[in-house]
Length: 620
Image 1 (cartoon, helix red, strand yellow):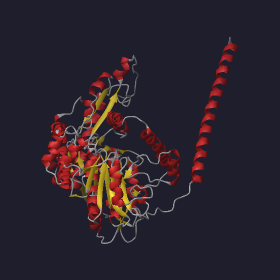
Image 2 (cartoon, one colour):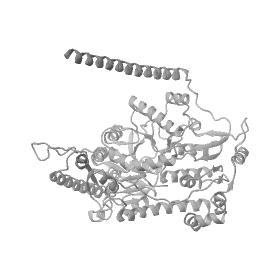
Image 3 (cartoon, helix red, strand yellow):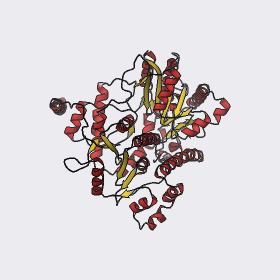
Image 4 (cartoon, rainbow, N blue to C red):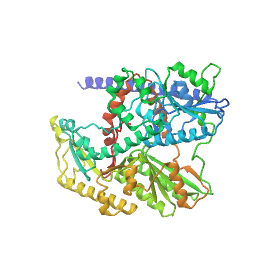
């Protein structure tokens, strides 16, 4: 019998070895093929000389993908691999500063006849970014050159930017989508109850609505009130800008959005005709008519098409902003802090407590850096990581160098925690800020497990021995401990803002408890000093440092092999997703469903305390 069992075990052992050998061989072959492909790509790649735009033409300002403040710079290897895989023409992230640089340079470039806005692949973008791009286009038009917008269909955010153009054209089968803005979220309380997950929620602030999706099935009255306040302010900004640029009345926009059915009926159901009659567009042109129009404006190439200069090619013809190293004559350092705030070192697109602190330390130690501008685009995150960053900011301030905060689309909660001690804070009118409050959320699964017939039991030396065991309910002692710690964290947040902004505690109680404000309102309340963009913040930092002549430069972390690998991998995934036939609306719906869950899953604060403003679904 023993021999039989031994024989069976040996058979399985040999089968296991064979399967393991096949697995290892397959992986090695796959790696070898990938290596051969990369070597082939590199050896066949011949670096292009700097692109020369010798012939005049229209600069096609393609704003594809999400508009970001910082991204991994492209490299020749990735470029050639993208081309070999056929991914080079797919939408990617577009760097915000690249757009501004291209527009500014084009204004004084005789090769650029006009700018053609290409907005069909525009992804996520902040209203403050659109305003700044619009301002740059206005400056470009002052050179006497035209800005043309021409699309088959205008989504709301694309149309807002198109309104800054001299002429707007629409396909006769197209439409202009203006529908207002809203903040809608998915709520999971019933789903969590059905799964019998016991979510232990601790929060400070009547208006701290970050955890409402797991506490409620609907938005609270307090959250609705504060959201409606800043939504109204942003929508007023959008409509005023459009009516100013298009020379329309506010009533015409209001009628277009509120009475679209009756308005469309009077136009015979023709959406393009309605847009033309309302004055939203200057003309209707088929694609062929548009090609002829642009060829007359920009000139024809050898194939009879209009002469065009692609954005990526154009960017290689001039020096980008803020890329030169700090000079001894006086330099302003610029650090980008974009994304959720988490502990440790984090990749670009996420603010790591350690990562950002290292960059601030770098600015502190560099004798050529005379002042620092910290560009914050964040809804917050870990309280611990926010405080680690603030502690490094305080060390920086001991040098006497000025620190100016430039707020992007959002700088709220933890984002405001790290901003409060700055010498000056600038925001755009469309910035969302404030949200001074913190919370903790700890799920336990004892009820879920009991439904499956699984139970946790045992003994420990203290009443807190099983404190971090999520298969057991939180002990009353632990709940009390968390609650005390939470209130201490909130009081610390109030002290930081009160001391940093010179606001009394009595005044601050009316601004805190999680309330969110638009930039203009925040300035009125003293949470922000001035309204302005990144360039204004740089100028302000130079004035505080007493610099008449200066340069500005990004302070960035060095790229690692891990960063390169993740960049290439994410690029492949993004390209594959872009090439699939999955409905964009389905992807958007899935994204909305996963957004609050993804944020909660990213939480990694060691004490479980968070200062975060979760406003995901601002439908611009």
